Length: 140
Image 1 (cartoon, rainbow, N blue to C red):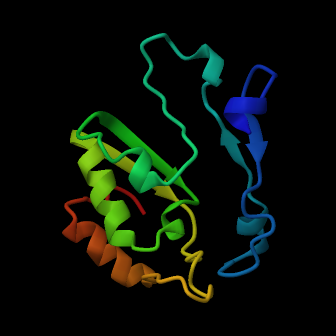
Image 2 (cartoon, one colour; image 1 turned 60 degrees about the vertical axis):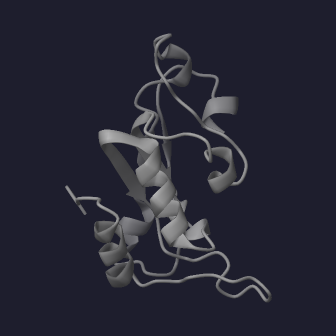
C-alpha cells in the first residue's frame, strides 16, 4: 500500500493492532497508532537502496550475500515454515555491522494448517535462537 498507493506528501498513521485481540496488555496498546513512512518513498535520494518484493523470501533473496546495511521486518517472521531458515537468510543478507529491526507478533501462520510443517517457538525460545544466530539485542 505505502509504496504503491500513497499519493499525498508526508507520513500516514496506521493502526496495525486495532483488530488484534490476542496478547493485548491494554486497549491503549491495541489502538496505538504507528506513523509510516518517516520519508515518503518518492523523496528518497537516487542512491537510496530500498527493496520491497512479493514472493517467497527465501527464494527472492537466495543469491544475495552481505549487501544490506539494514533489514526491517514487520509482521513477517511468523510467516516462516522454519524460522531458523529466515534467521540464517537475514544474517547472510546483512553487511558486517548491519542492523535487523523486527516488529510483530508470533502468530505462526502455518500452525493450524493441515499438511503444513511449521516450527512454532515461544518468544523465549525464539530469542535464544536469534542470539545463537549472532544477533545482539539493542532494544526489546
